[in-house]
Structures are given as C-alpha cells and as structure tokens.
Image (tube, rainbow, N blue to C red; front, side, top):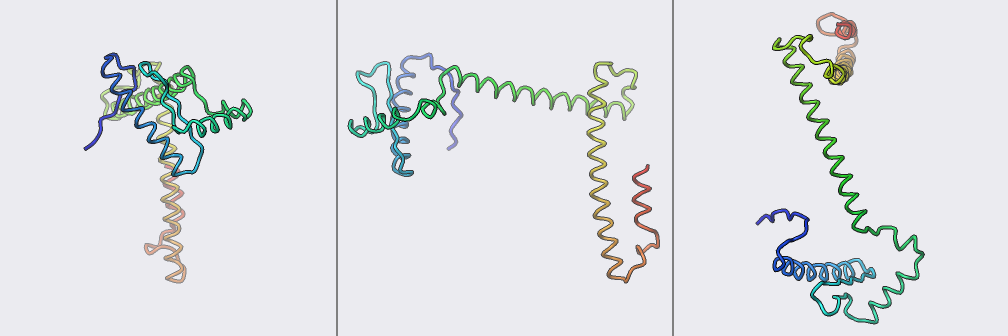
Length: 193
C-alpha cells in the first residue's frame, strides 16, 4: 500500500494534532534508538510536548542523557550550531527551494512557448512580423540553442562517419569509400549548407 504524502503544515484540529504528536514522538524515539544502535553514535532526543508533564527523553537513562548533553556543550559554539536550523532558517531554505523551482518552471514554460512559436512560424500560421518585439530575444535564444544542438549532432555523426570510413579503408586497403566519393568532402559540404 502506498502512503499518501503528508502536507507539512500546522494541524488545526486539536485532537488530530495530539494523535499525530503521540505517533510522531514514538516514531522519532524509535529512529533515535536505531541510529544509536546501528551507527554506534551518541544520540539524545528531548521532546517537549504541550500536554506532557515532563519531556520525552531518549536515552531514558538520566546519566547517559546527561553525559551526551555535557559532551555536546563542551564543544565550541561554532561546532554546536554548525547544522542547527531554527524555524526562520528552515523556512528561508524552503522558500529558496520553492523560488528556484518556480524559476525553473517559468524558464521551461517560456522555452515551450518559444518552441511553439517556432512551429507556428515554420508552418506559416504566423509571420515574423506578427511576433511581438518582446518575444524576439527569447525566440533568438531558443533558435541558437537548437542550432547548437544540431551542430553537435552533426559533429558526432561526422566523427562516427569518419571512423566508419577509416575502418572501411583499413579493411579494404585504403582507397576511400565504396562509392568512390571522398567522405570528408561530403562532410564539409554538409557543414557549409
């Protein structure tokens, strides 16, 4: 069974929030214990719940929890805060990622619009005079990108073509291609047209 993706946002319903809290705390404590056992690292989790009399602490042994916290506090402040996130920095990271995704989506949408415009121009649904001035720069950029891609494919094909011709020459003792035409001339002619 596939789980549906949980939306990470505040749960308004108080009862649902308490149930989620209890389940998540239990899961977090389990994961903390597994991390400690599987990787042999010092791990401590302290969770303050709004309805709990005392925080949930793992490891439950007070001496062990105190030892891990003391070890952490003895580290320089720079090391302590190296990977810490407060709510503001977490939200800022999320915002930056969302902005980057939006920018990429806008860029892809714009490229698709320009490709559609190129198709319309080639099928004569539009004339170049009908293209708005504000689209000409993007249109030129997409056309140049397509030309670069085409040139790259031609070069790759030519390298394969020359390699095939050289193999044929080596097998047949030289003399060019089977049709008597110099393959390099054909390649040069294709490049110039």
